[in-house]
Length: 240
Image (tube, rainbow, N blue to C red; front, side, top):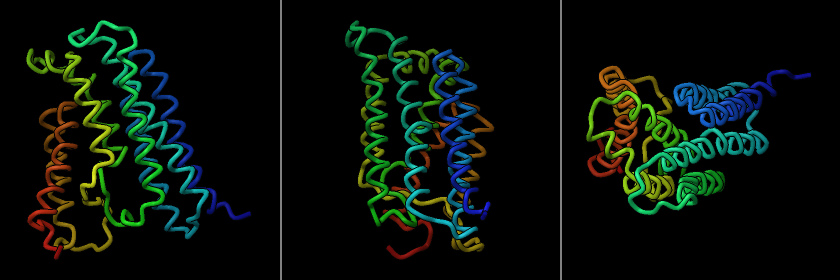
């Protein structure tokens, strides 16, 4: 029995397991533990492909398992978080008890992106549209920003139905937008070939260190902004 060929899929299933646990913590309003398990699931999601390539066991089964696991960790969980935030928000648009269900538009957008990603041959070395793990971290950080922020303006914005619904709609859009985003994969170990990734990772560390959970949405926004600037000005030094 070749144990190596089962390692990548096992790691993928650990991603799914983390997503399931995160759902339980969201239902209990424990957003810190939910964030931790989503982050852990994304960590597993990053390394399942790494080990699949390392052991040369890539295949259709792994591809499908990866999308199904991501659907929970990076699709259902962020949608559930937004549902919860909308449930507790100021009723500026409507007081209907059904309005918060619109938070699951994020889940629908994630599902469409994951399905399209599997058949889109353009996304082997980079991304088109925001990857679902990045979107998930953004959403999971919002209740923590609310919890720990001392800014009345931030609290006012993130408890507003208008703002939360706008974030929901924009999330579904940016997940599937025709916007090329650079990949964090490092293929050549030279500074010149990875300058954009190094700049982004350095910026990410600084943002999280200085702003804690509030740094997470700033990291995601900086990722999109750097990608747009790179598309326009070739910041990585590559010819477009």
